[in-house]
Image (cartoon, rainbow over all chains, first blue to last red; front, side, top):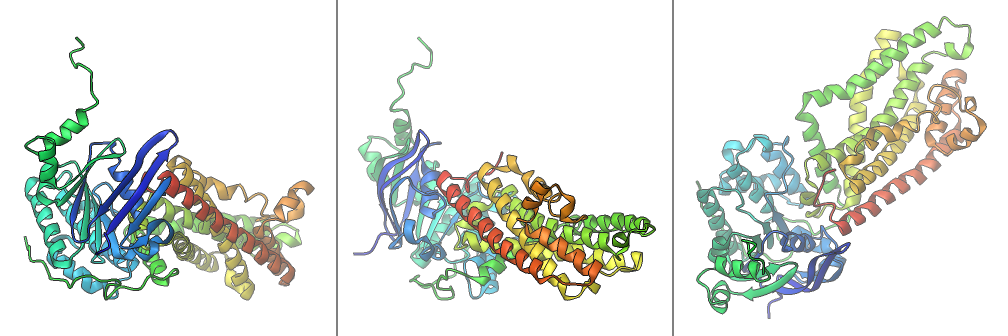
Length: 250
Length: 286
């Protein structure tokens, strides 16, 4: 039996009196695209930060690619990567300089060759020597993707990869990620609250709310289970399930 | 848009072309130093600013020296003592600022999450900060030292090998303070940014930069002698006034620097762990 790419047990994160993530368990199968869905404050970014080792859990266990992330995260960090539109690359460095730094941080033996490959695949040629702070959103997204793929990761964690992108660029990014997974056998975990994106891309969905996983499974199965037509309707049901207030005040 | 996906072979640990992860990688340290060099190179004003302050200091103290050379005092007539003191103080100051500014560049660009999702270790980052601080200090101080030769007929380099000893000790001490200050900024956010400038100045009065330590009140002398900088500046005066390199002061400076460097690094690593607990790597701001 294949080891799951990610295995999480009893994962909890508490800040003071706030429980950001509350005792969650989940597994992400190798060579899958799994979506972590949830509204603002659901705990998606906190969960991803713990998976990356940027945030120490309060309790629980995380295994990534068979390694314990809390004790031995450096054994896997070179095999994974992440991308987020909310975490920038230094704006004054050119795209090439930024990629060169990260290629060296990830220990690529042929950093220049790898960068050339990514320039071709992601069509970065026109702005490769432009400062990263002078790019459009679409260009920045492609650069962020290039950085996330610099080490040809086995596991890719993406936090809202198509946020603030026009539909054409967003569609291109989705297609590219699906192609990367197929070509390399990589695993992708993507945090999003774009339901149609998740329906298209995700083979598995983990739905989070207030730090809990409230449902999980294949998108179609979740939709059927809730008796809805789309994942967005399911999401709204879950988001509104504890609301009792009449908005008119009557 | 080119949508051709280059076919990769199925990944298997370790991926060909990647290093097996090492706990200490000069390459990662070099990558971070390169990053800071790229940042420096991208702004000519920052490069000019590096040399500007040491040159202004040197000019100011150079004229002061010229004035005081008319004095009867043998000590004050010791050639270039004030210029040497100003330049060596700048080494310590620049070393501290070099670490802190490079650290702040990461905080301002909200980039810590990107860096520490990579295999970069925090101690490698600390070493890269010290490395770039050395480069920044050299870029700043050497032009000022060279300019003193035609302007005041004084060459800091005539001090000879003792200059290397003084330089190394002050670089290390300034860097250790820079690491500790950077740790405080990481812990308390950009609201504590002014520590980068304020912290090192608190040590200036008790480092005996321009006057002997015995000028200070006796209770303050004990504090001064706990600093490697005091030993360095006393040693500098011994070389310039008496032509003697005092090995006792040198060893004192080195021993104290070992303690301060280990302490600075320990504080940095401890705060880094706190940052991981509290999510500080994910959010940067006041």
